[in-house]
Length: 226
Image (cartoon, rainbow, N blue to C red):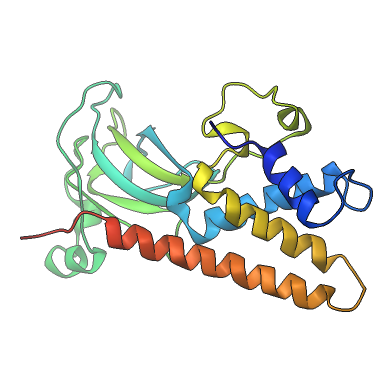
């Protein structure tokens, strides 16, 4: 059964000894939950990915859609219609192209892509080789790390439809990390003795959970090479 925003928030209320929402109303905890999802997506872009077909722009430089945080992969060519699966596309270090073929941005354009270059320090752009023609540009299948949808008031009542991964809109395995983030933000609001220490402890727990998820992901990934 998918974990809901209501479940995470009710669990937080129980731990905060505020089950009726007097001190931390739903709208406030919902804000914390949505902020937590954005933090998870920032720490672990693979937590919320989408596979789509992207229409390329003329030339080598390409821009992902506005809601994209990072590029995860450029998988394969999809022809000029976006429905014709073709040659696989491989990543290549931009420095290699710069050294071996300094004029690679200006070679003869082709709609079929061979390689792509991506630098996470510049997540809003990537480059393809060879350049795309001014007309009849190709389309490629891509995997993006995106911001998860916000949970809403209606989704708290279980009425949200048509969204993946339940109404927390990220995989259920991140529900406990979301709970920890909510508790961090809730205690940060308090002024009584010990509240800031509790807030800091929950924040540290959240950060450690993100590190553990990343370590686990690397450990279970298929190994490359012989």
